[in-house]
Length: 340
Image (cartoon, rainbow, N blue to C red):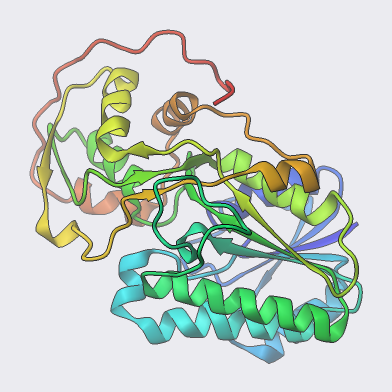
């Protein structure tokens, strides 16, 4: 099967492209916004890579016409929330107009999988469901993803291709490209800091391992039945939410390091949901997917092989000599891929 992964060099796109390329013909379309290609030579031998910008309809149309995909997985986006808030126009151009360009070029019968976000939901203490939960974004990123969903549903019905909207929750694990919470923590600790600077500590989030996320998108692209013109919406997460304070406690035990946390006003978000978690019953039922990694296993994997983009770690290397960290008691018995 021919599958095109838009943003295939990114955090989730890279493991997804690797996964798909073992059995399918895969084309990665990426702007390389976050640095050079991060595939090995052996991996590149199984991939077709096209440098292109989804904001350019001619580039998008030419790439899709040349590859003739049977499925498109659209992961490319401006998804770091502070960046979206600082430049709403850029977020709208990439996340909405770029999505429209891809939908316009989508071939008849090609399954279109759109990476949306749990950020489209209204805050709630309970896990969010695709049908019963209120859709009410509270930030620019959430609005752009909701608008993207609207275009996916409309264009799928108009042009008769099957579509899947995947509302992805917080992803953690090796290979992050944006300064989200966990890579920021790990980057500071790996640089040797005994005091790390963070923003809000109380919000609870549903953290899914990046490999589980990649498997979820593979299932959305290949599994189950989606009729031409239909659009299926599913959540992709674990159904378990943890506060920043809880995550820090687990990371202290996993890393064996004792560190202090300082509040950085510059990192505190004016709008931050108290709880964000996914009800994942529908993706299990429709596409046969469920998570394999526990929160502790995911944190351990991130700590042991962070593989962060260089622009996430350089700023800490340039700072003053850090204070060595004292050791703490390690957390025993972490499985590589335990159930949540």
